[in-house]
Amino acid sequence: MAFDADSHAALAALLDHVRAAGADAAEASLAVRQSLSVDVRMGALEGVEREEARSVALRAFIGKRQAAASSTDLSPKALKALAERVAEMAKAAPEDPYCGLLEPEYRAKAPFAELEQADTAAPAPDWLQAQATAAEAASLAIPGVSKSAGAGASSEASHFVYATSDGFVGGDSSTSYSLGTQPIAEKDGKMERDYEWRTKRFLADLPGAEEIGALAGTRAAARLGARKLESRRAPIIFENRLAGRILGPALSGISGAAVARGTSFLKDKLGQRVFAPGFAIREDPFVKRGLSSHAFDGEGGAVRAQDIYADGVLQTWLLNSATARQLGLKPTGHATFGHGGPPGAATSNLFVTPGPDDLATLMRNAGAGLLVTEMFSPSLNMNTGDWSVGVAGAWFEGGDLAFPVSEVTVAGNLLDMFARLIPGADLDRRGSLEIPSLLVDDLAIGGV
Image 1 (cartoon, helix red, strand yellow):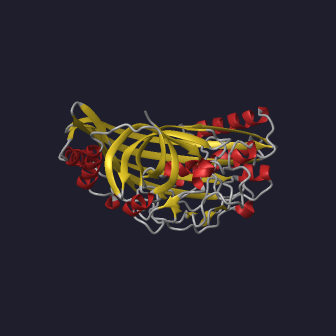
Image 2 (image 1 turned 120 degrees about the vertical axis):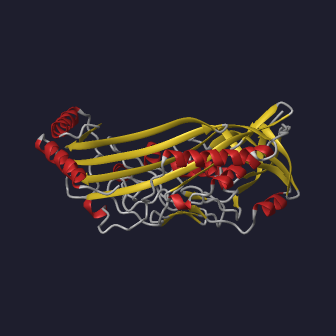
Image 3 (image 1 turned 180 degrees about the vertical axis):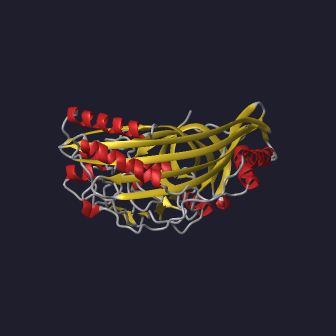
């Protein structure tokens, strides 16, 4: 989906109209999205959904007041009405001493990096259905798998343009393709389910349907015969495909908004050790075909590859322009695209530095413990870092899996857990977070 003159003309018109209506400054964006998804279950077509959406958004500033709104009507009359409405809303809004456009010195400069975000492949519904059916069939072929909760395949293309009243204009086009299935295994009247799902920017990079289905089926079958555990303390290994959920609070807790409100267990940790020595999380927004790559942030800000945590030490907050002003710091290039509202803050592609040991060696070194392969209903006190979650997985002994486990919880304080995290070598590269399995040497397990 290429940029077109109409996109730029619509945004230019919005900015002209809102300044004529009294705005001191403004930002406008246009988003276009086309998607196609196909779902099957037990070999039968369950549904085909096609979506096309197009919208414009405007945020205007009058002094230290701001307002924003969006519209799906791009006609000249509607654009003028949207601009006038937003200007009137801004005049009536309460003052916000930190609002405003990003300062020009922090803006990204053209030409922007080519990040290979858009493929030309446009698979037809029949092809997507065939892929979903093949993935499901491969999972059903695994011994122990009796049925399926469904499989799906989808494609999406999007186009985004962002412009400001002080002259910044940037755009991005991207595609994504997804395929996954959720098989159900059954034994002695008891059922277990698992899944495998992949998303890629380019269709050719997507794993084969048979590979995805077989992996999902194998995982589901491995959960048959699950037992409960007695409450105890033991080493816990979080499998790489879900280990990112452990690190989520280490990122949301360093957002500028959380730090400025004082509602984060990490609010005083900048420049201090949070993780074990050697532990590192690096960010790179310029990865070609990366799922979270971008050449500029949601305010047109310059972005860069940087360490979020290095040798266990927190290196930066995640700041947009407003939270940077509130904290008396410089923005860090982490603004998200608001498209109808103020931006938030988030990271791009992240890379956790792996350790030297594969999963089997991690288990062997740990002795006996729990490998967590599913997590549900997490509970987190963001002020203290106290955390608990329901889990399922497998008990391991001497480097080998002994038996599947379900209906237990694990709990601890995240600061204590982070300080003892040991990364494995088994990197999972399915999303925008590249991460290995993570070992915590001792956690409370709640069972029977």
